[in-house]
Image 1: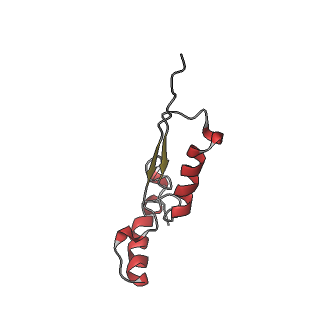
Image 2: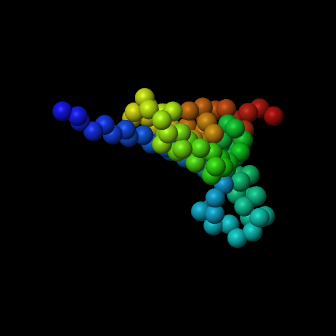
Image 3: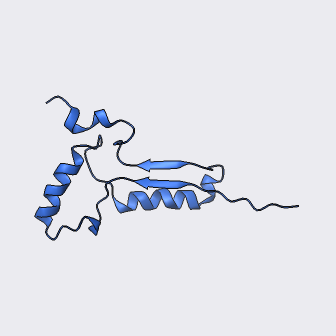
Length: 90
């Protein structure tokens, strides 16, 4: 008997450059970005295309052996927060 196999994986995005932040002007967004990136070790916001690329990978045959994974896409904020600019000595 063939049992259907379902793969369940999760993408957990961090701060990403999208309109969800509700900033009305480029200047307002730049100010928000400056605050947000202080807590991100990669010192930048994620791009929507980066999240889409991981989703495409998980939907492809390239990820056939990936099951039950949570892929955190937060620039290192969750896994290595002390590497963020706010904690670096200047």
